[in-house]
Amino acid sequence: MDVLNLSFFKILGIMENDYDFQIQVETNSPPLACPHCGYETNLYKHGNREQLSMDLPIHGKRVGLLIKRQRYRCRDCNQTFWERLEHTIDEKRNCTKRLLSYIEKQTLKRTFVSISEDVGLNEKTIRNIFRDYINRLEQTLRFETPNWLGIDEIHIIKPRCVLTNIEERTLLDILPNRNKETVVGNLSRIPNRGRIQYVTMDMWQPYKDAVRAVLPKAIIIIDKFHVVRMANQALETVRKQLRVGLSAKERRGLMHDRFILLKRHKELTDMDKITLDLWTKNYPSLGIAYDLKESFFDLWDSDSRQEAYFKYHD
Ligand SMILES: [Zn+2]
Image (tube, rainbow, N blue to C red):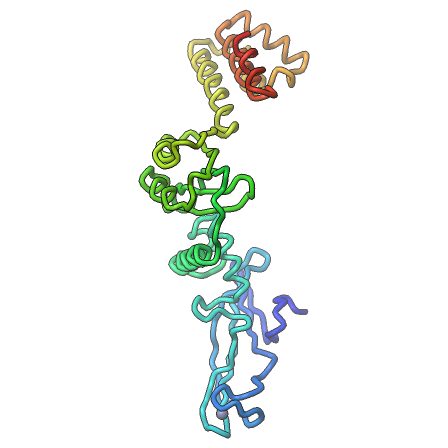
């Protein structure tokens, strides 16, 4: 059975413990010609050594390939050479090429420490792979300046600013942090940045300051998600304040209050409505807070600004 799915290797043996597989392999295709003189048939084996290269985890365990690497000597020019593994192995990082590309993708999503534990390469190597990957992306990708720029966040060791093209749904850049200076520096290097009409972001003040400074004409749009979350947080504050002053018995009367209060009005069951009415009679501030939260959410459901305006001033 070919558990490795690597046609280049033949499996000689497998060892396994709770965390690791160690798989002994050798290549199954000897070299066709001498790399020094190019002569084709006059090669003979001249020693070998074992080389450990990491591969993709299998069933949640790290995989080390113990490669029996063959050395050859050429009868024609008398020179020796190690058999080549470049189809499969990245010699610089000492892992399979497919593990390398797996790590590259993972570095955009997870911490280096957790990837390191997962694949069995040390953290410094993971960081170097990430750095090479980002450099390669920067060199090979030329991005169109978007009309609609997204400013987001990703957590790699620490929060970092991420720039995206909203319409194309592509990544433009990952910055080392989310400071105003860093964002300003990066935005000011975007060619034809006057083309950017809209910028979407969360409510992180340095992003707003940076955009105001570098893209004064762009319209800033706050992600709906971040805004409606604030309405829920305000309601939570009122609810918690109220509970502090209540007796244990009164608090029991407010069971599941958070669950019901977070529901949109149209999602309330008949029983929820009766409960909510009762609470509103006993604790008017809770009813007011709920209504305010709902009217705020309604703004986002409006089809147009005008409709939102009338709803708000109703
Ligand atoms: Zn030769």
